Structures are given as structure tokens and as C-alpha cells.
Length: 264
Ligand code: SAH
Image (tube, rainbow, N blue to C red; front, side, top):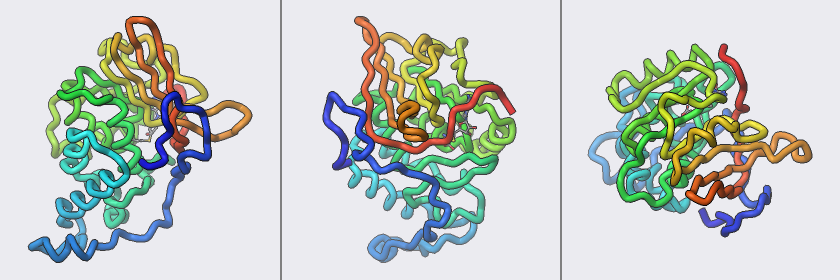
């Protein structure tokens, strides 16, 4: 991302544009160049769309946005995002837009998923160890993470989405991905300590449990509200646990669904 702030980052909401739901986005158009190269039609045909070429085009755009981590780009090119959205939205599956997944929740933009994954990996050469994701949603990001880590625990507080994610993920048979139903505010003690923790929902602060469950050398990436003065505004926050203590960095503005307590 050209606009990525330099370290130490300041909380400046003019830096990154918030990325609200864009339910009115136009359906995906077939890029002319890619269509010319591909041997099969790229026109989405229900569930049978030639997603590989469309996905490669998405990965190319992620590169242009500044994503460089080869493992992240590979994972984004591998996981079929169109399998995680409702059939009516399949045409938009590879656009850089968030989409509704039911129960008032959204699947994050590919740009945001890859940005957070890259931050989480922090330049690691191999796979991460154990990762905790708060907010499984439709399971898309969990699937991406499962290719970047040895073990992934993903918690969802809404039963309907937890079940939907299980259904969406079945075809992938990801043995290292564990879906949990519960309140992720408390983290997941049994899997701790984590090499990385990622939240897909934003609260007013990072719950202490997450920080406690982070391994030394581990990194947490979460959207956090900027406080009472800028209602609703969130920024991406990175917390590194080092042997010397915690280091917090505030990055660009983001727009995530709220972190809520309890289950439903
Ligand atoms: N990563 C998801 C994004 C889903 S949106 C995807 O790829 O689809 C964020 C999700 O966080 C929502 O499903 C919401 O229900 C969930 N969430 C919010 N607060 C939570 C909490 N305390 N514990 C677990 N999940 C939570």
C-alpha cells in the first residue's frame, strides 16, 4: 500500500480509507487480458466459475497494493473465496470488497485479509506455529490462515455462522484448522501460547486474555476503536510480545464489525 504509514505509526485516520460494506458494488467483470490468455471462459457460471484465473487476477491486484509475502499471496491464490459467499454474490467474490455473510456480519475484503495476514507473519520464512482467530464468520480467513500456520484455532460467537463455516470448509479438509463455538473475548486458553492472534471484529480495547495468550515473540493484529472522541472509527493495531515486554503499533484506519461478548 502506497499510503502505509511509516514507523512509529501515528493514529491518523486520514491515512487509510475506511472500508465499509459495499453491498452496491458492481458485479465482477472479466479482465480482458486475462480472458484472452485463458483457455476457458472466465464468465462466472454459477458455482462452476473458472475461479483460478479470476483469483490470479485478484492476487496481482494484491501485489499492486503492496502485499509481498509469498506465502500470503500463494494462500490468497489457493483458497476459493467464491465458495464462502452466497451464490447471489459469487460474481463479486474476487473483487476487493467486503460482502454480507448473514446475521449482520461480513467477510473482509481480500486486501484486508492479506494485509493482516502479512502483518501477522511479520516476514517469517516458514509457517507460523499456533494461530488464534477471533471471528470465524464464513471461514474464509480461517482457511487462508490454515495455509500459513501449523495449527489454527478459530472462534465464532454466532452459532449460525459457526455452522456455516463448518459447511463452507468441509470440501477443503483442513486437518490443522479447529473451529470453536464460543466467546472469543476470552481467547482460547487451551491452545495458548499463540505465535499469532488475529481478530476479525473490533472492540474498544484489546482484551487482556488475548495479550496473556500471546507467546513471547508472538504478534497480535486487531482492529481497535480509537475511543470515545472518534465514535465508530477503528484502526489496525499490532501488539508484539518481546522478552522485554509489549510493543504496540497503530496502523491505518479500518472498518470491521463490532466485537461483542457472549454467544448467540
Ligand atoms: N474472518 C471472517 C470475518 C467475519 S466478520 C471471514 O473470513 O468471514 C467477524 C466475525 O466476528 C463475525 O462473524 C462476528 O460474529 C464475530 N465475532 C464478534 N465478536 C466475537 C467474539 N467475542 N467471539 C467470537 N466471534 C466474534
